[in-house]
Amino acid sequence: MTDVWGMIYVFMLASFLGLGVIRRVSRLLHTPLMSLTNAMSAIAVVGAILVSGGEYPTSIRVLGTIALFASMTNIVSGFLITHRMLALFKTRRAEGTPR
Amino acid sequence: MTAGIAQLAYLIAGALFILALYWMNSPVTARKGVSAGVAGTAMAVVATWAEPSVVHSGWIILAIIGGFLVGIPLSRVPLTAVPQRTALSHAFGGGAAGLVGTAEFYLHLTGGSTALTPFRTGAIMAEIVLGYLTFTGSLMAAAKLQELKWIPQRPVTYPLQNVGNLLILAAAVAIAIAITFNPTAPWAPALFLLVVALALVFGVLLIIPIGGADMPTVIAILNAYAGLSAVAMGFVLDNRLLITAGALDGSSGLILAIVMSRAMNRPFTNVLFGAFGRATQTAAVDETKVYKSETVDGVAQVLEQAAFVVIIPGYGMAVAQAQHKVRELYDQLRKRDIKVKFAIHPVAGRMPGHMNVLLAEADIPYTDLVEMDEINPEMPQCDVALVIGANDVVNPAARSEPHSPIYGMPIIEADKARTVIAIKRGRSPGFSGLENDLYFTDHTWMLFGDASVVVGELVKQLAADAAGGRKQAA
Image (cartoon, rainbow over all chains, first blue to last red; front, side):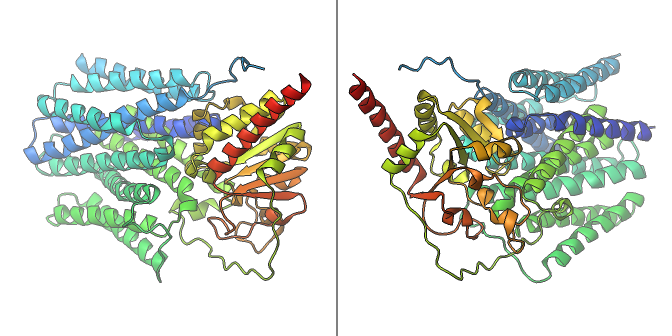
């Protein structure tokens, strides 16, 4: 028996937590924020792994494997591009400009 | 025992995800956030792979390799193309949720281990509706952003569009509810496919009437939908990590959509189901107004006299690839001890925060990138407002013309600066087709030309002046 109310409760808490935490994210970083949350929500990959690797009919496993590929693409590209964008944000360089 | 270890891994992964978002509140700590996200994802993947029910690994390995082969090039796109990449990743996320939901449904139908309770079936239906509509909707958005030729850029509208779209969505939801309460009925498998088809069609129709100016909002909404489809998958699989990650993603998309809709002064209800029908404006030009043009030479002199310059970039600057020239201009002005700030409107780019990333890439320190609300009180002290490739976000009609379609939209108050210089490609009105009165005020001078070329000449002139000045002094 699945704990339906427990799951809904987790959803409720996580939503309020998300609203609270994300409201404080610097506006400078809204683009990297979107690529980061996108990579993290690709944790849906766990569902794809269960379907792809289980003892199921081939057609079902094919669906799971395509989903696994799509999620993995999001994980890889999402984290890499977030890292790449964040590396661009620098404070003022040492004022070494020749006069 | 192993189940306990998997649950512990999910718990830690969830905590790492929350920390990752918490660290995004400042550019100083943000990079830690990526590491936390990677660690959480890796733990969850390994824990799931180790589950006893996962008996085949061959296809998993292949799919993971495929993910790397496609994901690495996708992470190296030019930063102007980040909005398309983001839309594409929403499509992948939605598509994955839809496929897993489909697999789960037919699996349970053919005598799976767990029964199709109304709750689980309902979650599957929510997962596939949200997943598939996000899939096609995001593909459409990505195609529009990439400016593919066979996708119309302009909003496509036709009679009864809203009613038709809502009927399709209502039909999909109605059938989904019917299946939820009768999952084992003989008609359920066929109608399930009909729901899939309706959701796919609805996603396309949702994006067709939306024009380029609304894309930042649309991307944020699709972000929220993709997150919610992951939540639904979490309900189906009884996995709290998925629910948490999806809820964080969904609330992020929601907040960004609210920020964007406020920045464009569009009611949020208008935005929830996509931006149905944008007010079309018949720009009635009753009188021919006169621009005052200025030469590069003259603008250079004005800039040299200034103590405080605010640069207001728009997407036109990015289209002209002028960011690096603008950085050189910034360096020239800073060398003269002129205070320079960049005023960033929330919708200056093509997705939330896009302009900041483009300027950061050009090596402009983020400490000089200032939000609209922070810069506006300073505008009356500003000697020169330099508008580069921006238009609607500095249009004073938003304050003064109740009949203007952008009336009420918050703007950067460039007109309050002592002098305004606007670099503009041509004399035609901007993207929205609106006249901009800013260009006709007494203290505005226009500098016509390609932003990259014009700013480049400006930099050359300033550099020459600096060299000349030094010679005279010597």
